[in-house]
Length: 572
Image (cartoon, rainbow, N blue to C red):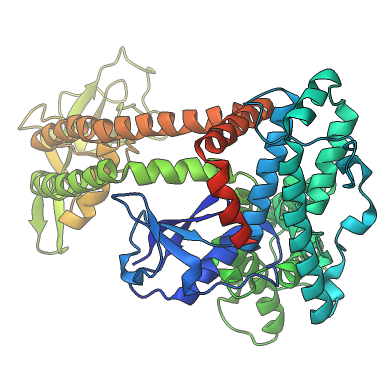
């Protein structure tokens, strides 16, 4: 089972998923390269060679990292340190830049490392402000030979060591005194930092066309053009979904595919855009092997596949082929790519609320079974052997006399009706039977009806009627129980008997209590997670920079410079 661990290299740390007992050293190296290089659209350096001795496991009890550990000791939460010469060089360059800034701001002790941007009098070394382009390694070295590459890497390592030695030598009392009398200007400091970055090779590698294409497609915030492209693709998704819904209207619906139909043409144009984007993503992805492990990438394929499948099988006359059209709607899920923050908040909320959700499902399931059984026995009614179904009492039809002073003076069965107030209407009693059954009735000024009542008004003059019971089984009663417990109450199925209505009241109260308690916990978790995300987003860039500088200063002052320098020499 996979478990989260932490990989540390240079001055950086990342969280990755470790395979567990089945992992190998190769898997550990692959995780390092993916986390620190591929995920950041950086090429893996040629000089990066990771062996078993490159990995150290930090002891959870003593905090000491050691070599030669067994892989089964890597467990959830373990910290593995990697000796990566490239990342350590970048960390050293970042530390040099931070110390130079501290020097210009007079932060730290006098003997702390500073960068002098002016030529040093009486010395033969070239000052940082006098750098030349010969000190800069060629950025376009991707096409060099292996010998040239190895030679340039050797020269780069030597330049980094020489730059560090010169920088340490510059921190003498005389140079510090000179800095106090003649402070470094902002232009000189900027030139010095630029020189340090070039000499120490501290820069991001130039992106290749493939990397720039992937960044353009996958990171909307990388450039204004990428943002505009993402907006256009989302507009096409919304337009395609809208046309898919509109074409199902009866006045536009085409049962068979008609290539000249306007909706087919619009769908084909949208699919062409989706297909072009999918091909570009497949060509530009930095990790084609694991590309389809991302669910959003699978959505891209599923969104266009039904269209081409329908075209290929258009003449095959396969029944139900049009059902594949609904699969195109999965492209709507691509909208989550833009609002991944919302999806992340929802996923974290559901993860943190797993136990309340389990309680909600458990108690709801138990209550549904028990209460559905009770309402079944209360509402099923009587078994009709002839029809083979459960019949429950519906209404009572009772005789009602309409006197002469109600309604028209002449009551005609064809024009006069009597409203019952229920769904079932009042029914005329045949006037031809009045002379036998109702001899005292003065027809046509008076009339006799049979009207429905929800209760038995008169046992001698009322007839009970039955209807098929909607609670004819316990599984059928599940629907009513769930709808009532969730306080939705569609009203399509209702209990009509006294005991069934009592059970209905119990279900309503139980639903409010059982569902409201877990929902409160879930809402509280959502509010907490949402607040943390909003706080992180509203943190200004200046505050982030100040926080990072404070962390760097704390880390630098805790380390002894005399002990750090030999270790960095070995790393380079």
